[in-house]
Image (tube, rainbow, N blue to C red; front, side, top):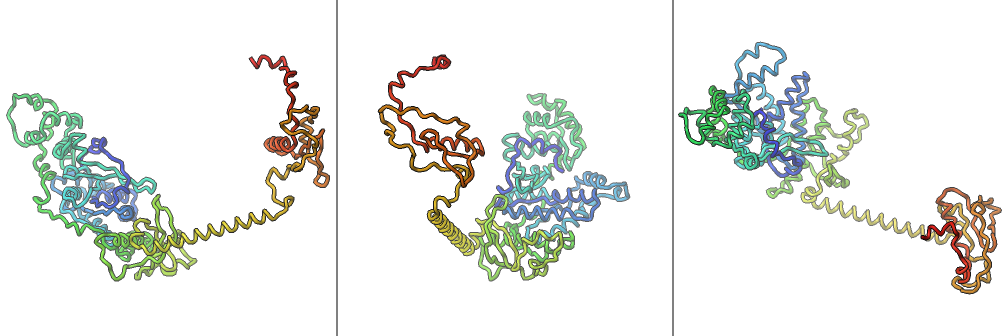
Length: 568
């Protein structure tokens, strides 16, 4: 549980970062933080399903897909200071008071040890590195982080900072659209909040922690921060452990303040020295051993062992378990081939056969690759051609093929691991694309040739041409002056009314042009306002314009009286 209210206090330095940004890093995972919540759900729901194993599988798959190597850390023997907290937790987990609540607390935590053993078997089958802590798991995570063996810690326990962790992650979101995590950096905690490691330990005693749950009542973070800004935290610890005489210096007002008196009175029975030793003692003085960097790597997954464990613990169908674990083996093969330390081996457990297509998975370009079947896979043979699949396994049809499995892998990684397959696929894709383009060009040429060869009256018409009769090319008006002639204009032609122009066209066999004066007008079938306007414009352009009016006609023109006021 850690320090009460610590995460709220550290919220100003919280960073919300995408999970993909942790790719290529190693992170120590406090396994108890992931399993305890699921164990509590199991107890409340009274279900036989082992949720802690199921959720652990999907969390590990999500991390490994993002190239994040988890290092699972389990709890060992609890410190004696934690006995009261463990007793309270045991009583809270029981629905009725039984004789078990009166038994002394076992600091070796046998129930959690049994669960950790099951998780260890699964982690070993998946090739995930595991570390068994002699004491608290968050303490081992912090030591691994401080020694540079991992890049950060994953825990909901704020004690990790008190043990010396430099970077802590919590609240993993595995949503495919927004996979993210909250990050807290010890450097920002010190620089922006003014809280060093010793200050956080002092704050844990005041607010309450696993080794002193009661804390100091009615003293909050604000009062503690004001106190620490006036005095040295090391001197504060000395005054809590050693008796001092009354002082008369400039700090006398601080040590005589009501806040300090309340703190000293409430912590009189607290084993302050033991709490300080638990948080501040380094790992080598505790007699602990650190794992080597070579042991904290992802090794080859054992698919058959992992499937058998899921059948035993979760009652999964073997084919469903294969669909979860086989992609991990493919990812491991690809990354081992792209690693700088990769050594050519005689044969991988399975081989990529061909690239089926290119697709996008969670906005990441991937190749959909067909892989060969594993030699020890006795569950998926014949599944691709079988028509009597269970209803729960219908969705697995896209995963299994006649030759093996269909798996999506990132383009950037697969191209480096198997360049010959990538080059072959891209060259074939280019050839097929060019063939399609050439076929489309030939088809367009054929269509254009057919259109040119068709008579004008048999050519296909558009939606408007079906209702509009085109005007003849030659005009019926003869012996007219040119358009820009200045000769005397002929008498004005009487234009027909609009209603006379837009009249329904006669039948096809009796379709004739109507002449009004010397102008030809187009007979149309009214369908829409747009077609009417377009037809009117076409008719005006098709007819031959009259001569320009003479200058004398312009001189005689007078503005109507009703329009004179608009010209002002």
